[in-house]
Every structure is written in C-alpha cells, then in structure tokens.
Amino acid sequence: MNDFDNDHHSVLQRLATFPRCRLAHVPTPLEAMERLSTRLDGVALFVKRDDCTGLGFGGNKIRQLEYYLGQALKVKADTVLITGAVQSNFVRATAAAARRCGMECHIQLEERVPNVDELHRSSGNVLLNRILGATLHSYPSGEDEEGADAKLKEIGEELRQDGSVPYIIPLGAAHDPLGALGYIDAAAELLTQLDQRSLRMDHLIVSSGSGATHAGLLFGLRALGSPIGVIGVCPRRDAESQAQRIAGHIEKLSNMLDLKSDITSDDIRVTDVSLAPGYGQLNDATMEALTLTAECEGLFLDPVYTAKAMAGLLHLARQREISGNVLFWHTGGQPALFGYGDALTGHQ
Image (cartoon, rainbow, N blue to C red):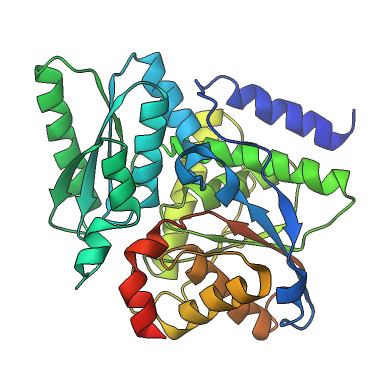
C-alpha cells in the first residue's frame, strides 16, 4: 500500500463516522476542454463536471447535502429548512433532496441582488422550488447571515410547536461546515481519476461562495498529499473576507475530523477579480466567460457562480498567473440562467 493509499484510507475512515445519505451520481466526469484551451496560451484546460451529480438538476450542493441529509435522517427529521438568495442553487437542491428522503422543505429567500425583475422571482430555481412543493418564506436582507439564521430558527420552532421535527441547514460561517465533507470525498475521487489516467493537475479553479466546496477540496487534497494549487473565485465577498472564511472552515474541518492540517495562509488562494459590481450581478467579464464556454465547449455556466469563476480563470491565465494543466470545477447552477434571461439578453 503506497502513501496515497494510506492517506486515502485514513481520511475515508474519518468521513465514515458521519451519517451520510447517498444522493449524488458519482464519480462525475473529468473532461478535457480542448477548444477553449486554444484560446489560452500555455494552459491545457480540463473540467470536473459536478453539474452532473444528478438529483434535482445536480450541482455541487448534492455532494454537500449527502452529509446534511444524513444528519437529518439520523435525528428523524421530517422537515428541512434552509436560507439562500432568490435564485439560490442550494435551496433548490435541498428541496429536491428533502423530497427524495420523504421530507418537507421550508426555504427562506433573501434579498441579495438589487433591482431584480419579475422573471428573476418566478423562473429558474424559484420555479423548481415551487414544483418541488417547498414552502417559501422571505427575508428582507441579503447581507445578514446571523439574522437569516435566527429567522430560520424561529420558523423551525414554529414547526416544532406544530408537531414537526425540523432540521436546519445553517448559513453562517460560525457553524461547522458539514457540507464540506462532501468535497473531501470529492478530492479523493479526483485524485483517483487523475491516477487512472496518469494525468497531473497544476491548478484547480472553483467558485468560493459559502466556502464549503473550496475548503473541502483544499483540505481533502492536502490531507491526501496532493500539492494541486486551489484558487477560489469570489462571487459574493471580497478576497480578504473570503480567505478568512476559508481559514475558519479549514480549522473547523480539522477539529471535526480530528485530523491535523498543514494548510497555511499561502495555500488559501482567492481572487475577487470578477466580483464587481456584486453578488448575482453581471459584468462584461462574466458575460464573456459564459458565452465563450458555451460557444467553445457546448457547456453552460450560470451567471452567479460558475461564469464568474470562469471569468477569474480567464483573467489568471491571460495574466500568466496560472499555466500548465488547469482544472475548472463546474459546480452547476444552470437553472439560474432562466431566472436571468432578461438580464442576460439585455447585457449583450
């Protein structure tokens, strides 16, 4: 048994101590992006297709929900509660997972994006939430994680008093990033795929919003002895704030798994180059990334997360800050395209 096998076994042993509900179609494909690579000097681009995780239009949140729903089932919950933006992929995926597990779902939609139109409030993920039969609530602020979590607890308490057994998926960074465990597992999956194909990656680019996917991948890769550079592209907050959030997640993961982490501040790399003017708002770089990826690869990105992540990747490549084999982690989110239909056509 080589060092990778030993590390792999150790990490999986720790992951196996957490309740898990299998939901995702895995392993997800690892594909070359040959035509898009020709637009980038010195970069061979690949994509990890976590838009193909299957349940409820897929996306990265399905891997995370395996651990949240595992815990919900352990406590015999009959209702799941979650908060997120109006076009949140996480809340849509949660509603689908809850239904798969025979549970009700209450969704709190936060006003994170200014001046949205009626299509934004009725199509895309919102439409899917309604089709899934989720109960929708509204929260007036989009930058108040503590307040949103507190309101969610109030809703949960009302449900409890009515005889339900609620399980809350929290938003704030003060909570243990349970969903990040899904991306420690995903890191092991990736390394297995690379080993099978005798393929090496120099950099991995991923959207870094809540930070669970970014932190889980970074923690998992380092725990498994991989030096792949992980760069998170910020879709919601500035780079400094996001780096602090990732560092907090890494510390919590270390405690949760009782596994010492050698991750340093140099490992936590983030860029907010494609963030402006803010969360869920389009810019020229995002539009270019979205259309270029579609035209070159027939691959759709979403305007909130993956298109901004690809815009960050394009910037880093053009500035020669990354080179060699580069992996873009596609976190899904395509249903949001339909909620942004008018904004996208108006931005062209």
